[in-house]
Length: 191
Image (tube, rainbow, N blue to C red; front, side):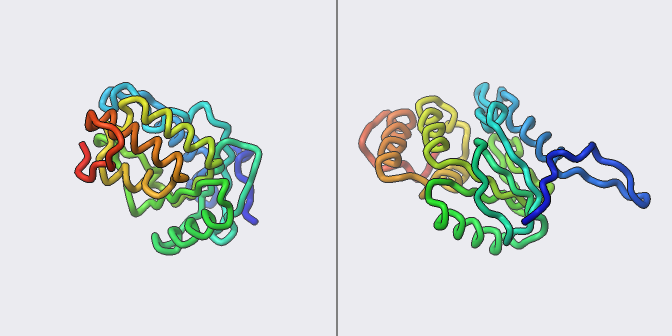
């Protein structure tokens, strides 16, 4: 298992090279995604990030495993390919069906209205309880939060992550707020 880095002091100098405290950088990223932004209709990239209890751990990709007791666990997994990260995330989603595991690969930057939403400095795997994340998403669907997302980004983050009941609710809310209709299929061309 990897080393827990949450208690390390700020970055220092060793042999003339700066030591990067990756945990501190991830904490700064959490602040970044928590800022309310005009270009996102007054929403933060992740409206719940700042209030969540978070555990951050640096670990090899193969060492990522379930850690309970906090709202979000962020694993800094270092160098790996997009394919190996996606395979591991898929495996974790099957092993722990009560949780949602999400990949954030540094070579796949993501943006919402021009604001970078992914970490970008290292590769991360995020883990949250499925029921809590889906409830938060359901609440956000009742607002215009997702109006600011490109359809491809929406599908990447949301598609295939719901139970049947939750998917029906979210699709109905999406259609009601984006199409002015109810009960239909989610639009593919987006806004």
